[in-house]
Amino acid sequence: MTKRSQAVITTAEERQRDGWNDPVHGAISWHTLLSSDITPTDSMSAGIAELSPGGELKPHRHDPSEIYFIFEGTGIVRIDGQETTVKSGTTVFIPGNAEHGIRNESSANLKFFYVFPTGSFADVVYRFPEN
Image (cartoon, rainbow, N blue to C red):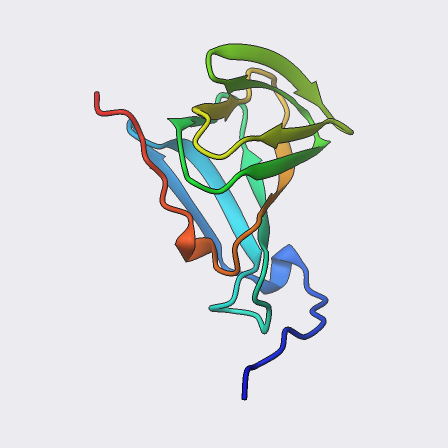
């Protein structure tokens, strides 16, 4: 018998904070909210990411497409070389395998909700250019 997804209601405070702070990946933290390895869900993964002032998720690629919804602060999103300023209320669709990154050049935190069309966040393989 196949397991079915279940409804999940959660908060960032209930989830572990992960992140990177190095020259390859940048300086970013996140809470994975939905992922089949931590929740009884099977078709999407999602979380909340945070960039402190000066923080950045360096340009990278991954196979699945992704959505960002900016809900706090302002920043710069770069997709395939094109930079766009984003602010609270902005939605960004990133096609699969598009090179993209986001940085916070403001003096306040930048927070965004991200979604992948894959059951587990672990299925998203980040590929950063070799420097």
